[in-house]
Length: 515
Image (cartoon, rainbow, N blue to C red; front, top):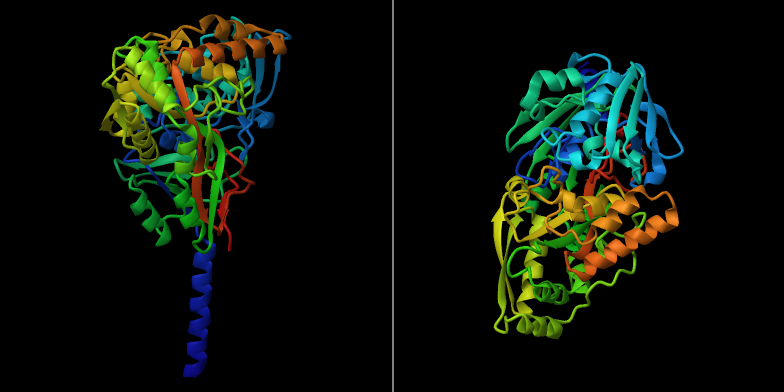
């Protein structure tokens, strides 16, 4: 009798243990950041925030999960759309039956119109410059949205996709919460906000009424662990199911050897560049800017970062974008030339330049490598390190003569050129985006290309703009860093991962743990 009882208990224990494994419903992600920045999608500008918000919000359209190219645009909150032949009038059919999180009711064309208007307003959006061509936004009825543009915009669907200002918010929630919306965001995505503990985690729970079906995961815990070593240990011990990797080859090589782990270097490559304030001494002298450009060895940087995880920058626009000049005339590495230029500019004994810089580890290691390269040419780069959110706040006030910025954008040249080099985007202006260079030398080409309907002429304008910017050394492209992530092999993302414009693997309603 005892033997039968013991056998029965053993079987029951195995069944319970097996059920517990099969029922794993919480995904724990480790992010390389000290804390959340802004959880309002129209204000969020950092990699950690963009990844998290991708689980909460939808766009009118989206790039198919796992892809990072506009070739894969598909319906999201808009089930269909049309435009006139000039590309100045866009009509979107809003999907019926979409529910906002936390009981805020159905998502309608009025919410979509509110979202576009909100994203266009500098007071409520860091992406207002992306929507400067918007003339009118109308909710024609509950399921019809009409957007009228002042002029055609290259890659317009990218601006209303599920990244940056294209994320759709729920009007009632945003109006009720005001500034508090950035701490308790309300969207329509597969997961809804549940809890935030500063410098610890954000917790999301499944949105059971998600229009594509209830998520297979019940919960996501998004933990903030800035130290790479601490994040790696937590992953290896089983505390984390997925981690943001240290952005270098050694991490990939080491983590790939762990049993039951998937490591991915995914698109897009974030371009790492130095943006030089051409109005700030000594950078107002083009010879100093040229010296800095000649002193940077892009090939050595790629070797330092790892050829399997990075590649050389090719232009002031990242490689692979529509309109990128893949053979832009970047300044070659030449320390002797750099020293000669400094001497010619009156700095034969060297020069000191300053930068305010983030403590985000992947970026910090890069700027320290650049610092060592510049020193060989007699250029002393003084680095003031600050926390990542502080870094973003200060560079947007124009406080750093040199800004090291690492970014990926919707892959059309217009987006990058407009945000980083159009003078309307200069930081401090009412229309500011991310022009830290104070350059205006390519305005005419950038703006003409934006409305040019002939594809060949448009590409030529983009090429000329890039040539001007490179020659004037407004920005110095260095390398492109692929996004490094790892997760446990028993996690099924629900799609094949090539890339994500939100810079982290999308977690969708199909993501689940396998038995």
